[in-house]
Amino acid sequence: MKAVNKNGTIRVYGSAPKSFNGNNKVYLTGFDRISEAQQKAEGLFDVVMPDGYDSRVHNLGDIYWDSANTRFTYPKTNKTWSQSLADMKTDKIANLKATANRKLSETDWIIVRDTELGNTTDQTTLDDRAAIRTSCATKESEINAKTTKAAVVKYDTSL
Image (cartoon, rainbow, N blue to C red; front, side, top):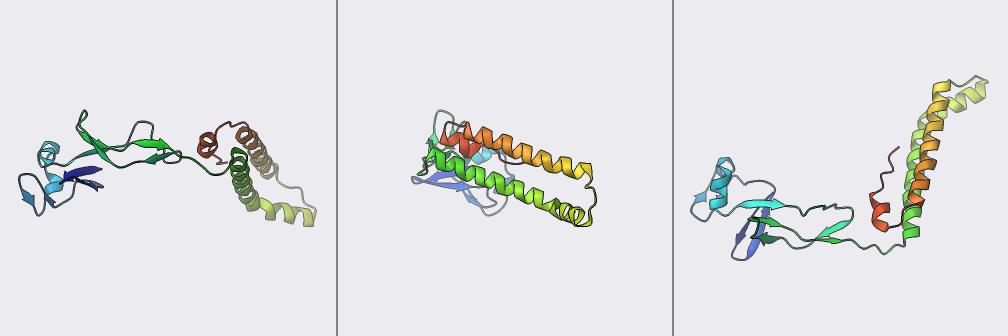
């Protein structure tokens, strides 16, 4: 990302724009192809996210000019959640179990078919289903062991 400060208003760009009204010149086209040094001379500088920023657990404040590092950046603050830690764990576990259920449902038809026909279900299918259930139970225990809301939010429930 890039940004420029024009008369006290900071404008942020996803990347260097093709056209730009710089400090020294107006670029109708091709501004995105000039050198980084030339872009800086025209007032366009990098935007850097704060160290350790994680959108799951941090909010960004208003962008500002970091003169010590010659760049724009944002302050970060920790998010706060209105839910209790226990409620957050309950929701995370519900999502985990829904994911496990979706994965198990992919082979439910095999179990139903084999049960109806009296067939023996392939061991690989049984092992795969057992692994899903085991992984789900392990992750549920790990979620319950979390002691902060941020840790619950950041916990990966993929199976």
